[in-house]
Amino acid sequence: MQMTRHRETSIARIFLVSSCLIATLAITHSSAISVIWDHFSFVCSPNQSFDSAEWKRTDEGMRQRKRAKMVDDLLNKHRLAGMTTTEIQNLLGIPNSVEGSPVNDYVYYLGPERAFPGLESEYLHVRFRDGKVEKVSIQKPERSRD
Picture 1 (cartoon, rainbow, N blue to C red):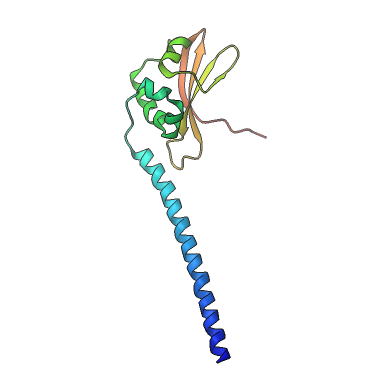
Picture 2 (picture 1 turned 90 degrees about the vertical axis):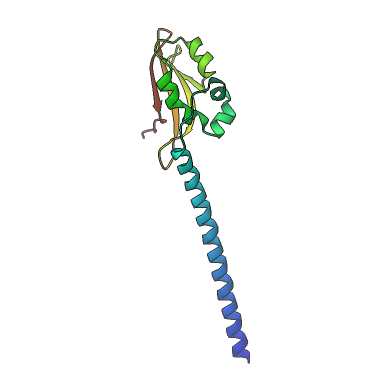
């Protein structure tokens, strides 16, 4: 009788541990699938037409990745080369950062990179020379080299 009770307890413990392990794997797996699905749905969803007012809504734009979806349309349909700093700010708003001294680059945050796995951020760099746009590019942050 003692042996049977011990065996039942062991089987119950094994079942409990196995159930917890399976539940943990299922939760982890579904979370990973959710993250991957979110990224693929973003990457595969169509680009949006550029909308200056939407672009300027920095918090919402970054959170919903709208800037990343609008940047291709912006670059294809708006001639930025030759625009002044004031014209760029009227179109895109205040940049997330300004690099160089005096002002050489405006940097606008786009969000996580559009290519899988989306681990790095992308930025729109607007380079000025003599107060006018010289070059526009999409870049990732440079990694520090030790």
